[in-house]
Length: 246
Image (tube, rainbow, N blue to C red; front, side, top):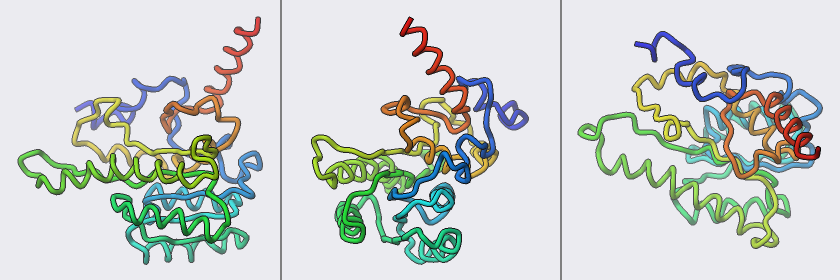
């Protein structure tokens, strides 16, 4: 019963920082001037709800110049844009209907970005994903395979075509951030998935905001849990760099 009684059952054992975050904090807050994203363009997949919608709000508050919302439910992202535009009238929003499993949809997305902004996006937030919660004997093979296609093929296609959208694909620039549930690396197979709800949905959006900045380059090519405290991580890097220079 530990997974139901202890809210940190799946968090604390895997944390590498003393502080475990559940809610937004100033270091990654979208209202912190240090996180201003003026001049930046971001593409968010799975943007119609949940983390994707929260990330769109975060980047709007951070004054991003362009936010491209990609999802299968075009009406939902159009409705979201209506809510976000008053937050920052200077942000240009695009809604693009995309099923990331469909390669033609993915190609079209990057063509639209190039046409509307005249250049590739600075950041790609791979957030679209699918989780079939059920036993093998109860889950139809087609539903299971749809999850594989979305979470693997879809992610690959988005990343591939983002790189191909660059002026020089062999030397791409920009930042790719991929959201994962963390189930695989932590063996978290309990049916108590409701524990995800303990984290404020804006926390992931704000962490993505942080990861897109130069000061987070020490994390490029790696992974970070949304609950880890970035100030502690930065302090560790500073101390390690100081020791290596001595």
